[in-house]
Length: 282
Image (cartoon, rainbow, N blue to C red; front, side, top):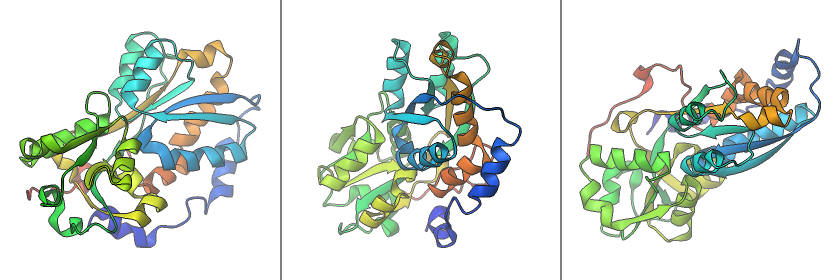
């Protein structure tokens, strides 16, 4: 059983201290004119950021227009002029590249989470993924394995690294079904296009997928640390939305937003490596 699974029994409502946190967050801040914030966010944030956005909109006059997808695709779109105000990437290297390209507001790079991956099967699957672990991918009934496309999706690269770590990549590569992003990857398994796959823990932890499937968490030591980061884009200054965008960034990285990220299975950037367990069983 993974550390995340063990902690679910004590999971509470992330907004239990909402009133206190909101007061603390806004104390001392000036009024910011209502704005529509254009957010590009990695698909692994699908459920977590929607919860965060909903509360942010309830507590402010701002509105958030959210786009979810592959971090690599967003990087390409922003590089070609897509008018997003802020970018939340599943790989902090993409925001760093945008900084080098001069497309960001100076000194606005931030880390917000560390991603985690799991082997996931539908609830009705005969594969005992909790017992078999990574070896579940070798089950005789497995004809297709869904992973995100490693060419532009950080979760796909993490999946490939983990498979190589366990010496399974060459054995299963021919079975891959590639999703354009990690949400589409999960959909492939849910829809029956693949019997099993490697997806983000943040998706597996969401109520809908938790009720629909079962999973085994891949040890963090089996793939490079997935530091997720973001940056405010120059568009925010050009459109006059910078203060509102900054307020949204601060909300996500505040104690309030981080509680939601934890609820969905993300590690936080400052958490010690000692919490990252090792399990080298094939």
